[in-house]
Structure formats: structure tokens, C-alpha cells
Image 1 (cartoon, rainbow, N blue to C red):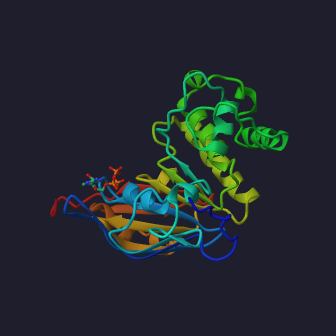
Image 2: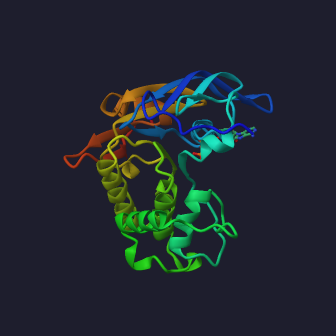
Image 3: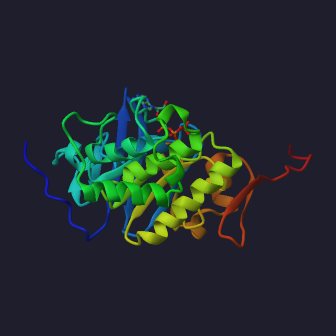
Length: 276
Ligand SMILES: Nc1ncnc2c1ncn2[C@@H]1O[C@H](COP(=O)(O)OP(=O)(O)OP(=O)(O)O)[C@@H](O)[C@H]1O
């Protein structure tokens, strides 16, 4: 196997050009183009089945396009060892299931080996252990570092998984519905952690999938709206998250408001009785 040198730290983090993805004879994505640069924080929104997770799996080098080009960290999918490329990405799936007996600290360390369990005869360096402790503290999990995975709440797991994904110092972090199932306090803590992470790591790029505008961190810079596998709109967040575009995307009239703290709310518009 050829060894991939660490991808260069310059240029776009992601470049998707004219991508179609067909599975079982069905077009799941059509004509998707997207460029993500260092320091950009993208939200990927769309209704159930719009293709968000499918697009995220392309960006995470998990699947290949049927047509078009996907470049991840400057490497073209189809011409690169994707397993190795994935080790330079932070791809957070809230459904990740680490081995039961691991502590938070162990789970975070498995981010270096990209495995569900600690690798036998592998030991982290003192520097790597320090880094794990620093990330655990940054995500507000210092007091729970020795807690065993099954005893954690869903919110604690979400934050531990972000720390895990950051261990290889990725340039790109992919988050698939990170706030799903969290209660109000856990969601707010998670969003605050994401904002802090972005502030501390200025060149980090992120792509976050969600159904809910209330789950978008205030630091979101760009958005893409997906509808039936196609891009309805993509670009700077305030150009894309408008009442008109989001209503079209979800096939329902909604009013979008961005409040003073930079967060969003979406409310259904009342449809006048005459046309309801
Ligand atoms: N391997 C596959 N073969 C055929 N269809 C698939 C395959 N994988 C996903 N799909 C379909 O592709 C569509 C897009 O799925 P995807 O999971 O990307 O949507 P999503 O926007 O993430 O949806 P949700 O919000 O419900 O999670 C869905 O209709 C899904 O059933």
C-alpha cells in the first residue's frame, strides 16, 4: 500500500464539482458542487431523505461519486487510499459505538487509531496523552474523564466524540446531527463547545448536518440547502437561510429569524384560512 503524506495545509479543504451519486438505479445526489475553505463552517440542511447524510459520506471519503469530482484535503477520491485519507478527517457520527468497558479518556485516545477499541500493544505517547486531556477539558468533560462509556449521558457522549475526532488534529470536522436526542441544556453546552472549538482552531473547517435551524451554532458561516438530492442554494449563511429559500427547501411556509446572539429560529407561517 502506498503511504499518503499528510495532506498540505493550504488550498480548499473540500472541492466537490458536478457530483451525481446513483444507488440501486436511483439518483441520490445530482449536480452537487461545493467548495469549503479553511475557517469556513457549513451547515447542510434539508428534509428527511434530501441526501444530507449521503453527501456527508462523500465528504468523509466513505463513498465515491458516480460522476463528477470530489477532492478531500486536495486528494481526489478514486485516486487515493481512502482509509488513510479518513485518518486525517474528523468524522463524528453520534451512533459510533466504542467498546463498552472504555473510559472517556480511552475513547478519546482511540481517535488516534480510528478504532472502536484500544489497539493491543499500542500505547499513546506522553504528548498524545496530554493532548487528549487538553481536548477533554476543552469540551467540558474533565470531571468525567475516567467515567465508563455506558454510564455517560447522550450529551456527554457527543462531546467526548468531538474530542476523539480532534485527536489526529484534522483540518476538517464532519458532524452528522450532533444535537439529536439532546435535552435543552446538553444541546446548548454542545453548541457552546463547538463555538469555542472554532474560535480556538481558526483554520479548522466544519460541515454540520441538521434538520433544525435551532441546532446551528452561531459561528456558522455558510449553508447549503438540499432538496431531493439537488442543491437548492449554497453560500454565505445569511444569503441562504432566508424565509423564502428555507420554505421552498422544506415545502412549508416558515419564517426564519436570526437573533442578536447569532442563532436562528424557524416558525411555521400561518396559512390564511382562505387558501388553507
Ligand atoms: N444505498 C442506498 N441505496 C438506495 N437508496 C439509498 C441508499 N442510501 C440511502 N438511500 C436513499 O437516499 C435518500 C437520501 O438519504 P440520506 O440518508 O442521505 O438522507 P438525509 O437527508 O440524510 O435524510 P434524514 O434527514 O432522514 O437523515 C433516502 O431516500 C434514502 O432512502
